[in-house]
Image (tube, rainbow, N blue to C red; front, top):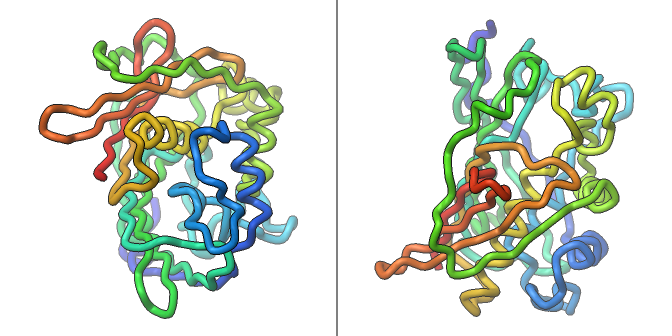
Amino acid sequence: MIDANEWIGRQVSDTQTIEAWPLNGLKSLVDPELQRDVIDARAAVHPCAHWLYFVPAADQSRIDVDGHPKRGDFIPPLALPRRMWAKSAISFAGDIKVGDRIEKVSTIASVDQKSGKSGELVFLEIDHKYLQDSRLLRHETQTIVYRDHQQYEDSIFTQLADDMPQWSYPTRLDPVELFRYSAITFNAHRIHYDADYTRNVEGYPSIIVQGQFIATLALSRALAALGMPRCKKFTFKAVKPVFSEQTFFIEGRQNDDGKILAWARQEDGRLNMTAEIEL
């Protein structure tokens, strides 16, 4: 176990220009009718497009066996091998536009080590701020969970989806689509493209759809269904993996109180992801 107090508050920052080319890639993967022409000059980028920038471009010598950068620089040197994006809460204070010069500041907010029936777990919370000339445009609190390798047990996932959606879109993502999304986010995690590694090392039955990809589709579908171009806040939580070539449904509804719920579920009704949107 690491001393969490040594890592809390650790910070890194970088500055980049928002270029159009990864937005073209995103537009090719998200149905064009669900988003504005994101490559128009000075157009506000897709609400999830910040994930296309500040990607983990570590030197190849610093890449670990799972495809992620080795730990110990910014990310604590956790011994647990399996890494999953558990949840995010994103607040939108202003638009990010093509051509903007944006600074991203990332801070280790907490390192929570737990032990339970499924073994040792570490929850790493990272605070990401996207700024332009010190003005906050976007704020994301991201939680990553680390655990030991275990054989995947499908039966443990029993949480059911809402059975009264206002919109429902059947979705099936193949390995080519997963590869293309990994390419525009420079995500080399092998569980998204290397079937042998995914089965034999991490114990899953097939390659896994990126949580970011599902979240992007869920938000796009919801905003399109509601006729809204943007939102104030978007939160999502991963519940169960979605595997390549598996049919799942992106759904949601708006309650009478205005609260917007979205989710992804598989054909038997079990949840893959939950989300909330504030307009």
